[in-house]
Each structure stands twice: as structure tokens, then as C-alpha cells.
Length: 208
Image (cartoon, rainbow, N blue to C red; front, side, top):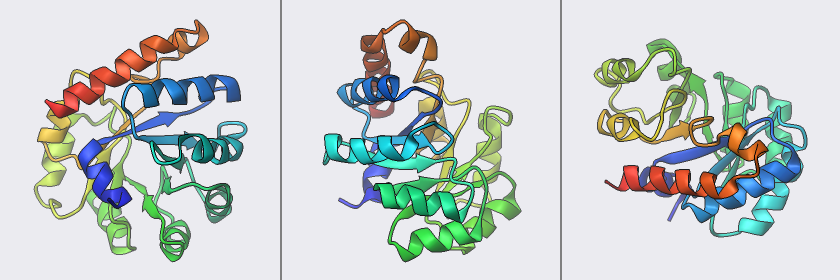
């Protein structure tokens, strides 16, 4: 199954940001144990490229590992060299999209307005990250899907276990999940089993 087809099925990308290597590793395992198959580590996380390389080896066929917050071509090259299987950006950068496509790697550029979304799509992105969604909310996704229903959208920000089903019902191709799934307070307390439980709850919410 292609990465995009698997993402269409799984509907979720977990986002790790700002954790230490030890915390990130334990979190990645906890997420995997809970059924999460797509994991993104942001490039502004210290040691991100090492994490990508390590996780590609550790999780092999059980998880897809990507790089997030890829804001320019240099970061894109570093991420791909480390083994990233997909790239996620907060912005729409033509060079990043072109590079990813040249390497046959999925890229999900960030966009918010109709003009930005269509521009990212026309540049070749097969799905577009709708960001920031925490400030805009579910109604914005519903409105934007009207004229742009042919473009796969991945809302990121503001999606939680209680509303993820609504986002999917409203037409989200997949959702980016950050702090609502990866609770730093639990991580600092070493409660990784709670991360696993939360991941499983998201999987169940999507399945239902």
C-alpha cells in the first residue's frame, strides 16, 4: 500500500516537537503501541535527523517516519538524507515541494487561504496541511471544502479525541495531532502508558 493510501486509511499524523531524544524515543514507542502509524518529528527539535534515522531502523514496516517544520530546501535535504518518508511544512515553499517530488517523497505543505491551498496543490502537493486550524476551527474546514473538495486537506491544530470524527466527517483527508495526543506533562512524569492509551482512543475514534 502506498504511503498516501495508508494515510487515507489511518487518518492521523502524530507530531513530536521539542522533546529530548530519550523522551521522543519512548513517546514514539508508546504511540506505536497505541496503533499510530504516522509519526512526524519537527526539524526544530534538537537531534531531529538522528531521531528520523533511528526510528526508520527501529520501526521499519510498522510506522511511517516523516519530518515536520521543514521551512526551506536545506532542511528538506537534511530530512530526506536522514530517511524521512514524508515532509510536512508550515508554509508553501516551491523549492521544497519540487525537491520532494524529485525524490518521490510525499510533501504536505502548509497553507490556510484558498489562494495558498490551490497554489500548493498546483505546485504538485498531493495533500495540503491546513494550518493553523486551532484558531480557525471546524467550520472553516467545512467552508473551505465547498469550493476545494478536490484537494486533500490535513487540518493541523485544534483536533482532539472528541472532535476528530467531526473533522473526518467534514472532509479531512487526515489530521495532524500534537499536544492533545502527546501530553508533555505525562511525558515529564514518565507516564508513557497514558500516551499509549490516548493513542488507542484516537484510533478507536477514527475507526468509529
